[in-house]
Length: 190
Image (tube, rainbow, N blue to C red):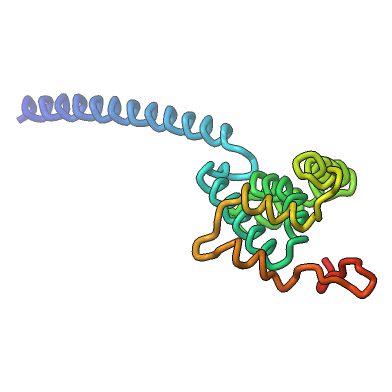
């Protein structure tokens, strides 16, 4: 009986030793996984998950559709959309929508960085320079800005599903009207 007790104790020691080895191996694996997790977390951007290219492309497409639609309603909106396209791009790259608090924080950061007069002046100036060099507005004789905008909308922006730019542009309710002095008058101010 003493012999069987001694064998049983040896067996328990072997099992305990094997269990301890398994526990040590599992602890090492846990430490390795925790280190990997920490390394991956430090590699993540501080503003949250990066915006996917697919989402960025979709936002740009929606923005262009919105500008096109509004331009067909009032041709002056195209200039506004042209000026604010870079702001939409930086907004989409900067603002995180991971949580409401993060969105508020990153939106405020975006406003501080990109909406100051120091940032807006050169952006507006560059877009107006682009407008003057890519359209015939400065040609001799100059064409009307409205014609240039409608031409640009027709050639550079994707067509909206179910809309016809030619039918709306020709009979646009917001087209300039001839005043009694022969000058164009605008039905809506921008």
